[in-house]
Length: 160
Image 1 (cartoon, rainbow, N blue to C red):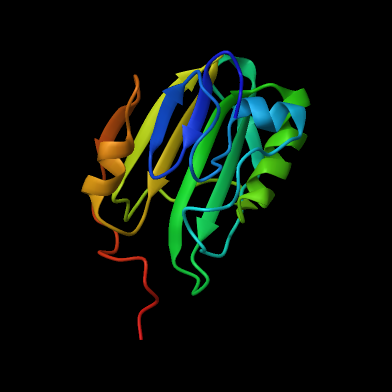
Image 2: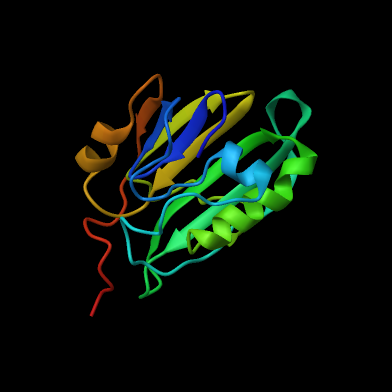
């Protein structure tokens, strides 16, 4: 999780110049170098995907990484815009390392909220689909912007 400015997505995105997130969240620095610093701590949830897509802001590639709980409940999905084409492979490796899956886009409905930030021209918007908004909003710091969603599940537990 190192790059002049790094994007650290834990419970919400934050910009830092330090050494990564406590949960080993994915950053462009790690992704571009193909390395993944930190552990998969934070959540023992399962995964669903992320994928490269169309052009984003500034002419780079769009990339999406989705993470679900072991029970299949969508927990979060991060959209990266303006990812340099030569960094997509590293983003894919980091997404997989974080138990995520590359998908073609992130759902725009049933969001608890999203944390958006920019670092080195890459725009990251991590949206959450379950759990308390206050948890994610309080972690959306250091120049990031929180946008409340239209709903989402109260918990990330699998319904019985």
